[in-house]
Image (cartoon, rainbow, N blue to C red; front, top):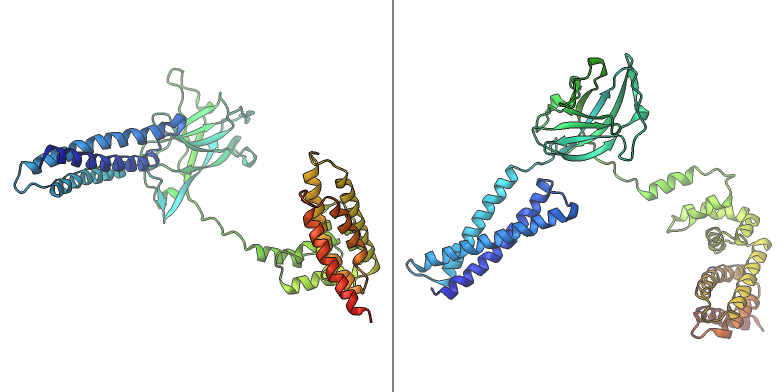
Length: 422
């Protein structure tokens, strides 16, 4: 086997080592809690990947030359020996890294947390927290702080003159040496030795003994009555409750509506693919309260107006108040089109005005079609007015959608009127 073949094998094994090193280090970022601050974790992955590539290239070259010096040398044989050696080293490294990883302990397959209580000296009052807040969390040697949680001063209680402040902190380390850090403010930043085994057992679910806080070795030991104490117990984190079915929640809310509730409370329950029985129940209320429905059609609240127009499509016997409200809405749409016709194309408010008019016309035309059919009216006059106004500058302005829809409705109404004419 030539040196050219050996170098090519070295290159391929180096690429394998590069990928393997990056993959292993990416896992180690989580296992060993490598900080992402200022890109540390990213640099670590890239650095180890490069080292893995160099190591893989050297292993591949060594294997290729070893095969070349032996019996029956060949490219595939050299590549197989080289890649096999690189994979073996990678698997061994992966296993060693996994054995030393700082994994979150579990019990019964569930994550754990620590319930803690901090017993303060007599006469101690909880100070005003500074910018860092009043928090507690697990602290590892070397200055590594794990996730911290807020203390709960509002849940504090008093026992024998001592204020006891609770908190719950995540337990995400299996390190055998760890501390509990409790911080009220810069002046009261406490550290407690945490004699908790790496893998908690059932006995750790009970409250521990009280543990005194440490103190600055450069200062004299505080008096016994001035010391803080803490105790802890392990808790199994309960699984999150499944989110309630929105349809069930909506159904329960519907059953709780008072018969005297205003119409805006009822209307939302008849849309969004509501069941037929619920729609029928809302329609029965709307039929009896058409004056209130007419007021909603005239309202300036867009959501309520659109819901009221949608409810009109279900009315079997529309009343005069609803008819007049729909005609008033048509006049407002027509007036809006007149105003938009007076705007210049470069007016910054022009696009928004067109969008609002299209939306209002779309909601209105569906309601008007149903109501004029049920009442046997000549529904053409308001539609024709809107059509003629929209035709003034329909092309290229976005008004063409209103003009087109109005024309389709007019054609249908004209055909219907022709059939009625003897």
